[in-house]
Amino acid sequence: MKMFPLQRAAAWSALALVSPAFVLTCAARAQQSAPDPPAPSAISIATVSTAGVSVSGSLSVADGRAVIGNNGSITAGDKTAHVHLTRGGELNVCASTQIHLSTDKSTPGGALMIALDRGALEAHYTPGQYSDVLLTPDLRILISPPGEADLSLRVNNQGDTCVDNHGDRAPYVLASSLFDGGAYRIQPNQRVLFEHGSLRSVVDNEQEPCGCPPPQPLSVAAAGTPGSNPAHPGQPLALNKSENKAAAENPFPLAESEGLQPPPPLSSKPAVPAGQSHAEVEAPLLYNSAAPPPPPAAATAPASQPEPALAQAPPAPKPHRSFFGHIGHFFAHLFGAK
Image (tube, rainbow, N blue to C red; front, side, top):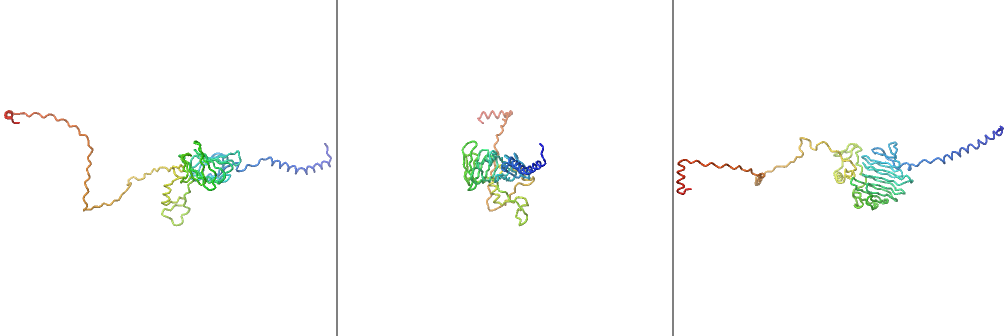
């Protein structure tokens, strides 16, 4: 089709007027068709510092922090690991404790599942719409809204499970057995101990703490008046006698028996060096001449032993009489002499 110059100019003018509207329309459609970027809560459930902590599972590490996806394991070292939940709140994983985190990704803001084999854990967060689950080798513990969770949990090697549902606004906490059946509700501000993980043997007023031990204070400066046993910078402070007694009588939760701290290695150095006496005792010696002498100590008779059998002596030979001896024997026999 042949266009005249006047018609060609009109076509170019119309195209110039339509093109900006056409470009804007296409851009708007492209933005509507493109999927929205996922929210942070949909791609991770928690973050934790990697310093002194072992992490595994679905995660990514950047700038010294691990971002845990739908599931992951966290193992604390010799210090408490602080795990920040993406939905808000915090989990304190006590020393030498391993937990496994997972969530239901089919629903937004799904329930949180925390599995713990042994050790101790502290949970500080607000439960969501769905009940969270805390699993131990023997119990299934539900944490349901409403309320603010300030929960402490401890499980030792014998299966003894301590649960502390602290706070006046504590959530609804229900423990059920994985083997025996039955359920036990832990009331707000109640601390219970399930012996060997059984609901049939419950101490409903447990005295021992269930969470992490308080950190031992450190010496941060060498200035000031030193005591009798000062600590160098960076070293733990020496405890007084009352604190040492309390630590000896109540070693949990860092006691080796609870499994939260490995036992110390055996020392190869002998307790008493060779050539030194183990103990020395000083006692004064007193003498009084007017006092009667002490009775002699009775001599202990040696243990009786069977006497050896005496060999029978051979019969003595008869004496040999001479001629006069025979005459004397005759007269003695004649007169009745014996």
